[in-house]
Image 1: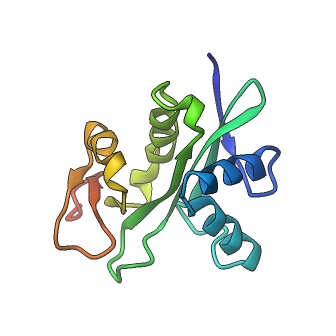
Image 2: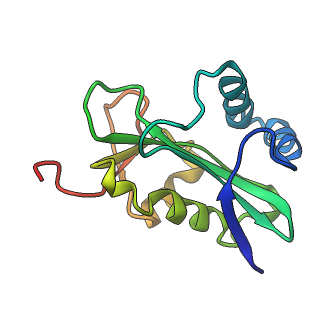
Length: 150
């Protein structure tokens, strides 16, 4: 299996099908991603931001994004957004490949990356080095990329 990682948009071939599958599973992250993209609210175009898709044999099987965290006033904090993998491709390293690509070089822009994961994904993030947090609104886990004192 050869996973191709490339920049994507909601207009990319196969995105609509992946979004439909996510919604059928009760996940709305790809619908929100598309809505915010179309409205111009979030185009993943600020410094350090990116939106990556994973494809296998030309079929998009996963998506993951990184933004400046909009829920904090602190500088140097990114937010992992909209990580979703096709149900038939889970547990086949697609999510890990997306996460690795998102994290790669992000330390040039961010000290930490936050995420607000569903409980079903806690183990995935913790295996990837994210630390579970409690008492922080809209953040379940964060990853330290570098010493913020620099």
